[in-house]
Length: 154
Image (cartoon, rainbow, N blue to C red; front, side):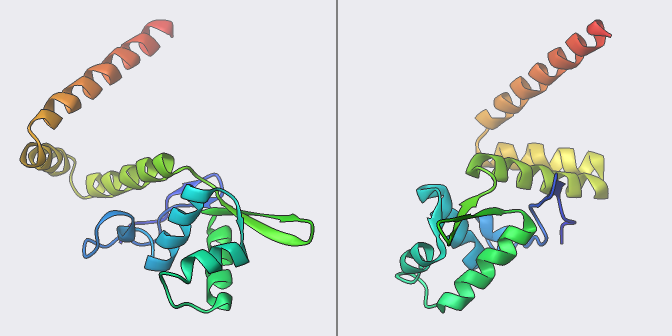
């Protein structure tokens, strides 16, 4: 299980499981569906979200609203009242959420063992696509240049 990643007042991750794939490793099934809907459609009312989600899932309206409000408390969603109706939107973009979730997963692995984490990342990349090793090398070189520039400015 991952510790919570807090970005300002945003709790991104409060669980991590290797049973599932993708966002379901860090979000519940309904949370994932709600976020995906809001990433795709932007702002929406609870009713609009319920109507769209209920085509795929058989959850009660109250359940959807409860989960939406819990996601607001976690900082995953924003909630704004407009003309007497609450509108929900994702607090983070899809790419930003994925980046921070990956960063936290790697940080958690590094807390176990730096050398084994690095070796595991390189081995997994090479198994998935050997060209990813080149991409990793480019990212490392960019970071080295950035750090050298920061050192020369000080």
